[in-house]
Length: 112
Length: 113
Image 1 (cartoon, chains in turn blue, green):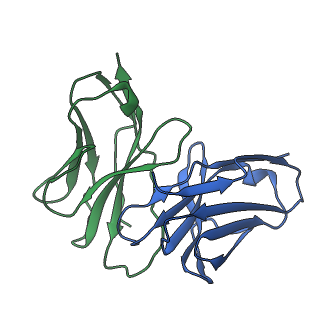
Image 2 (image 1 turned 135 degrees about the horizontal axis):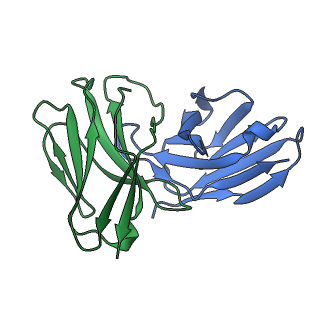
């Protein structure tokens, strides 16, 4: 399995609080992605990164920011969490953007 | 990315072959066909991808129609562990960008023992 971990794996927080999710890889892959998965919507892309300090928005980026200061870490931040951001968040990595992506185990976030 | 159409669910018996269809009638010449699957409570997992020719790997085979408007993922001998949601996704190599995968709702494959 690709060396990709996510932390925390589960988190419960309150509306209005900041939350940061971490994705860590040991594969030295250039590309990293954050998706969210909700019932009835499948996986949707939030943000992606194509290198250190190089990031761009995905389909559902409102309310989220990201940072990538090192190849191995891609952080997803919810500046002020809302109940609509309750979801399962998946990180993915790839060496080549047109070949396979490897997904992490996911983080289940609940915003009360 | 061009749109794909898959059946909502399919059922098969253990140790029998499974053929999962995908229609992509608006596919462009530079679209690759990718398949991923997602087991319960796990992240998606890459299965296979191809452009024009049929492809085989240790997990599955991908049969692509001659006009490329449809494809079929073939699991040669299904096991209970193959019960998952299977996603057919098109990726345009001509796009030049690094944007992510576009997941539809996929096919929920049920395997009966």
